[in-house]
Image (cartoon, rainbow, N blue to C red; front, side):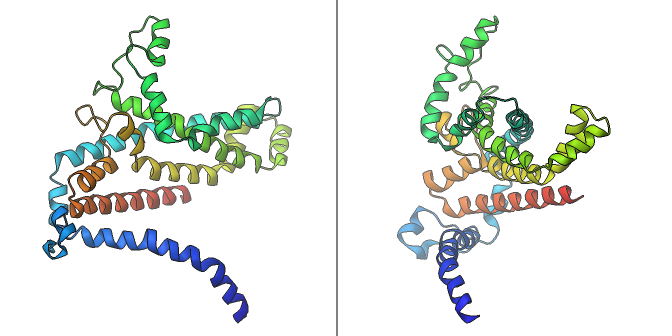
Length: 289
């Protein structure tokens, strides 16, 4: 028994150590820093940092830019989450059909955006959204529609970011739904056919209920991912124009690494952490009910 515990520690120990150093310790450090005025001067002399309690959080909740970033992030979440879920499920259903040809090719094409470097993708999408030479406005022009200034118009910039993030995450979620579909016993569909169910009824009363665990996992991970929106607005718009695409994490980055208000940035990180935990718990509770 002692020997087995020793080998468990040998194999699991390094992973737990890395988790402790790079995840758990930074979380506690952020909580501590959020209670201080730690800034660029304290980086040179730690004695300049002083304990200020909840002052950072009071300032944060009166910060108009924070609330702007908060609303932008939830705007992205409220649109990208259902759109990605529906499109990913539709793609998975089509790929799971027996008469679908070149399934592996489609899987690769769907998954490529997820594993491709974000910087490279952002450069391509900045060209796609170019108002004069971009592909998006060229396609709209074929239908007689004059395309907007996607990345420089506050009305359209966040929508452009949403299109980007939906496209990038679609393939990964499609493969998750596809894995869930392939785990559904075929006997259930055969029994439904014997009862006279058509294709829509089989999807509604067999596929969706059996996909419930996969749907919970996919939507939970998307909630966590979209709340941490950063790379896409940072690469395409830098949070502009007029802070129309400023996200919570991008605002955190500005405060921490441009203005070096590390205590204030840590308070943003704490709020975001609690927000993610709360929404994740709420989502899991709703799924049980």
